[in-house]
Image (cartoon, rainbow, N blue to C red):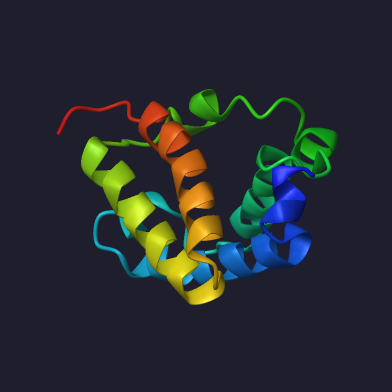
Length: 122
């Protein structure tokens, strides 16, 4: 079984993305680097996470190679911002995903990319 199916597939990923971005916009470290209109970003995040967790290659099919580090390069991402992003994701997972095991798996998989995007010293 793919991780995508194990964590709940499309429904879980959609619920995560929809619950996550209001937290990002409310966070003082994160809000300044995100656009006010999050709809396009929400859809891209849904596509990326679907693919990232082993589901259909929605992101690549529509946008090409994710090249996520390059796509994040224009934004000042510090370790504090990566920590804040992960904290928002953890709160989201606590709301959306009932299983402690599944929450842990998702968060562990996202820690690597979150810190990989750090491109600016504090």
